[in-house]
Amino acid sequence: MGYALFDTHAHYDDEKYNHDREALLGGLPDAGIVNVVNIGYDIGSSVKSGELASRYSFIWFAAGIHPHDAASAPEGWEGSIAGLLKNRKAVALGEIGLDYHYDLSPRDVQKDMFARQLALSGGLGTPVIIHDRDAHADIIDILKLSGGAPRGGVCHCFSGDRRLAGQALDLGLHIAFGGALTFKNAGDLAEAAAFTPPDRLLIETDCPYMSPAPYRGRRNDSTRLTIILERLAQIRGESPGYISDITTENAKKLFSIE
Ligand SMILES: [Zn+2]
Ligand SMILES: [Zn+2]
Image: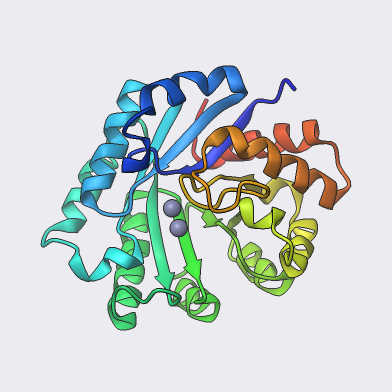
């Protein structure tokens, strides 16, 4: 093995890890996972992400309001997010974006929250983590109207085709591939993965969600990043070692991690 992998998207504050979190996280470095970004989706989970990052040297974090939670964001959320991002382990604003699959917040509220957090990231000079589910056109529109993401960012859990990948790349974004790449009907996605230039490629688990095949539907964790890595390498006709090296290097550069 001998990989040094960077999981750019995880939710280890999730209650599904309550019974074995310490043991699982403690074992990640020996399993070849050298960096993890734990991602907030509301104020509470962003605070918890920061706490995890303070306890583990290899964990970093992002703070932000997910589209699911856009309608329930408390008054003063902007100050809370800006405050959390002053932490030296904070590397990005996120996750932010649009989710038209579940529509847990009204779409106009989601759009407004996405635009406001993009503006906030510009002011703070932080990269953004973008969540896009069934909302490709509006994601690109709002990014363009907002002047893109000045410090860059990630299209996380990318689910589009080659055309969407091209639009995201034109906006200066990185593209993170996860478990979906291993699912049976991943044709368009595989094409996008082959098309993405090596210096914009990232990998992620989005754990506890998005377990790669053959573990689909079960609790995910960062050790399964190797499955995604190997699939990505196969699709691109490159060695897993090379993909491991470049995706870790890309993530460190984007998140300004030494
Ligand atoms: Zn997401
Ligand atoms: Zn997420």
